[in-house]
Image (cartoon, rainbow, N blue to C red; front, side, top):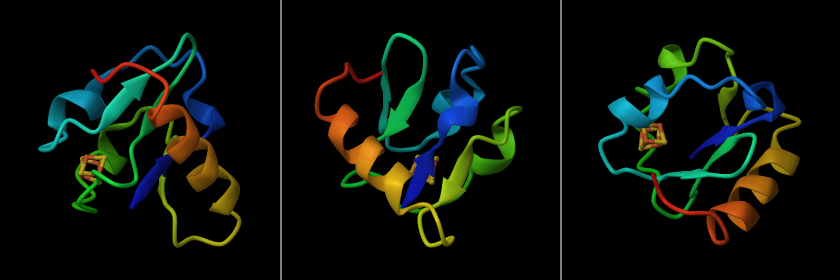
Length: 79
Ligand code: SF4
């Protein structure tokens, strides 16, 4: 799965949301997250992000972001 990191905070671009084939982005007040259970790992959102906030969870150090994305995607509205 791919995960959204804190570089997303206040980014305001929604290019990632537009390209996601499974609509697995969720929106909080200041950032977006990806639902790891719905993400099909296609990778098309990663290069669309102008803030470079989207990364694969397999990259070392991204475990914390996976947890955050999993937690908040269950609480925030789908967009
Ligand atoms: Fe959506 Fe693909 Fe990005 Fe996962 S990797 S969030 S399925 S665009």
